[in-house]
Amino acid sequence: MEYSELGKPPVSSMRVQPHLADPLTARRGFRWERLYRELDWLPGGHLNMAHECIDRHCKGEKAQRVAMLWEGKNGEEERYTFAQLRDETNRFANVLKGLGVQKGDRVFIYMERVPELYISLFGALKLGAIVGPLFSAFGPQPVKDRLLDSGAAVLVTQPHLRRNIAGILPDLPELKHIIVVNKNQRDKAPLPSGDLGYEELMAGASPQFDVARTSMYDYSVMHYTSGTTGKPKGVVHRHLAVVQQYATGRWVLDLHADKDIYWCTADPGWVTGTSYGMFAPWSNGVTQVIYEGGFGPSAWYQAIQKYRVTVWYTAPTAIRMLMKAGDELPGRFDLSSLRYLNSVGEPLNPEAVMWGVKVFKMPIHDNWWQTETGAILIGNYLAMPVRPGSMGRPIPGIVAGVLDDEYNEVPPGTEGNLAVRPGWPAMFHTYWRNQEMYNSRFRKGWYITGDRARVDKDGYFWFVGRADDVIKTAGHLVGPFEVESVLIEHPAVAEAAVIGKPDPLAYQIIKAFVALKNGYEESEALRQDILRHARQRLQSIAPRELEFRPSLPKTRSGKIMRRLLKAQELGLPVGDTSTLED
Ligand code: ATP
Ligand code: MG
Image (cartoon, rainbow, N blue to C red):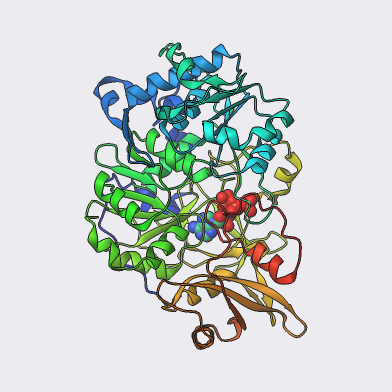
């Protein structure tokens, strides 16, 4: 990349620890166990995420600090202090206990982003249940697949979502209880027989609860992956994950309980929405904004202005959509509270990092992790210069490497399989009921991530593409990210995805799919202009074909599904599309 490094950002007031300045050298001798001391723990060496995120803050006056600033779809507002969250989650734990729910049972949550989602999730953790959040925009089939696969015993939901999935319920023999949250009485129809009313159950439940003495190795959360490359897998996490979520909340997101208002835009149905929309901020005692409404450039800027958000964690697709909405729009809001911007989920194009500098006067910090890793492993943190287009460097305690196809490490500058030495605290413990697939992810002492990357001589990692998306053309192995990043530098291009298309001479040629920014019209001249721009920058690895699309197919977590574009192009079966956006 020819972007030069962005200058060192203002030094944070956080206690900069020596190893943060140079994670590469400092990881030698680093021990996660040292961080264990910063958590509270339960008597007898037990660890429960809900205790670390809520109850530990309820000693003394900290208990009255606001944990959640909630804004509903229709502008409703609610706030909860840590003490209120403690009482409500205790109530819900008692509700589950009263229903006979046991440690290790699966409690699934299929709700919009309302406070009761958070209360029921943490209440279930307090009891020692395994929680499974489901994205509220899922239709019946994806919900059924996940409830069946996990053998969920309890489903917590809302009336309109309950109606959505009525047809699948007879097919779920292990599902014993459905609890319906009738928020704001907006749907007061009588409950279907057998269903339980959340409000009634909570009214009769005590706010005192003795948090389950879970071990750090007990299961806490299970998440199905985004389904970008295939059928989603049930990734199982342990209570121990909170150690790393807490640490990365400080190191990478620079969260401070005394000064920050944090907003993570991810839905709790995806791992970012729990690891960084619940566990990282609350284990750090930080106030967070929870915004129920969907994406909208003005609405989002408005939320930042209204709540005086300081630290923001979002995703490349959202950033590209904000870019598409224009550079003037942010100027109509007071966004001066923002001090630190972060992104995850897909590669962040250098153009987007630079847009942050232009519009917000600060770069967007990219970081990398997966559902399987449970927490951030590689990041551009505040204490180091950002290299636009790079995912950053491994956090302390993480040894990442780039391996060839025989799983041997390759030198800096060479592309290969991104791998990590196992044993970090937030590492997943299995794929639910699929130990074989779990085992297949480990080779020669490495966890194989399924992504391709290279590392530069300074230890910054550069994403190349998912192993499944890499294109072989005329003797080159090409990562889609590099080509797409050049395409979106063209002023007319909002989003781009490239695939390999079989070709008798070149093995594959690169075909691009492009969505245009507002104000641009599709035309042959524009198509040629974009292809010319790409040829100038990429030469032999430039796309040969380009097709305009109004938008690109994405998962509900906002990731471009190249496999779908490829299947459509080649007339092949499209595979699992349960997570595809409408
Ligand atoms: P599935 O495994 O079902 O195909 P998924 O991999 O999209 O779905 P997630 O666990 O939500 O499911 O996504 C993790 C993946 O997202 C990473 O493996 C990587 O491909 C991509 N990703 C996340 N953050 C970044 C980043 N900063 N840069 C590049 N890619 C990223
Ligand atoms: Mg994956």
